[in-house]
Amino acid sequence: MNIQDIKIGVIGLGYVGLPVLSLFSIKYNCWGLDIDEMRITQLLSGTDAKGSLSPTEVTDLSKRCVISSSWDDVSDCNFYIITVPTPIDYNKRPDTTALEDACSSLSQIIKKGDIVVFESTVYPGATEELCIPLLEAGAHLHSNSDFYVGYSPERVNVGDNEHALTNTTKIVSAQNDDTLDAIYNIYNKVFKAEIIKASSIKTAEAAKMYENVQRDVLIALANQYSDYCQTEGLNIKEVTECASTKWNFSKVYPGLVGGHCISVDPYYLLDRAKAKGANLQLIEEARSINEAKTGYVAKRIIDFANDTFVNHDHLKVLVIGFSYKKNVGDVRNTKVAELIGILSKSIGKIDCYDPLVDPNEVKKTYGLNIIISKEDISEKDYDIAIIAVKHNCIRGLLYKAKITIELEDFV
Image 1 (tube, helix red, strand yellow):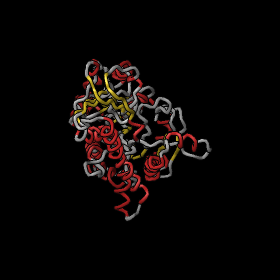
Image 2: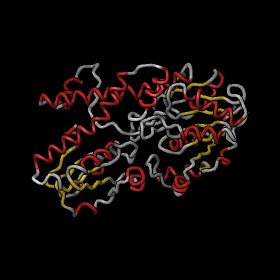
Image 3: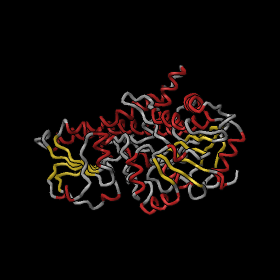
Image 4: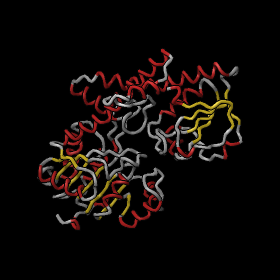
């Protein structure tokens, strides 16, 4: 297939999909779709509230591509990349609603010869057992003969400029060798990094899961060792620095595990393992340790407040930083929300300042009012200021507090 004949439709324009669309549109004719009409309106106005692209990049992208919320606008594409979210529900079970809806909608426009590549993170087996049947049923076509499917796990690390989309090794997989070669060739035109061919779709799915559960287990170890160091009166940071002088030590620090990957993906794997009758005790225990860490940190802060202030249950507290990691506005599964919930019941009224987040998203997701203007906190008097997320932009922030503490010192 000639490059001018390839028409790529990127489905889902969030933290993953928008950069993917931007990248592929440099070489290919591309269309972008997101069912969130507000998101489309925002992008067409030249703004990406998620911060993945600059206003100039968004404007240039909208000139190169059709960006729409209508499936009709992507119906002429012949190569689809699915980047919809795969979160968990309130019971920490996989929520594949968005993925299933995307498959059902795509099935109404998919044609013979089309290729569909899934990038959403899923449990091993999901593409072939969940997605493909939905595509076949709606399209009345057969995969691997009428249309073809591949899987290429996303590896976007939000806010990481060093490990960018284009220079991070990419894994591709497909139902057959010809489709695998086609996907490889299309991706190879836009990626600077090496592209690895996995032997099967399920192997690629499992590799993505392994990446994230390994990280979760290592952080759980760091969190548990940090608790132990507390009992010995040791500083976990210094212990980690000393230990990391050995070449094969993994330098991982303790912390609150939030976000869209490490705090979510293990539940997909655990749910799948349970269905298969497999026991992943270590991974399950790691999840429990990391989930409990917020409560431990909150207790340490409450104990500190009790020891420091007489009226420790009527304090005015400023929490600085709300997103799940520094220098990004991503609030998905941020543990700061849970921390605020615990502290507000024990030590008083809490304000939270974070200029990087979308206050409407925070209000909708967590029911919290976030302060984004530094003027709104500069004249208030606080008893405690807690630096929860150390964004670069908070350096030199002016506020009045009797005591300032850093969350990482209580982890």
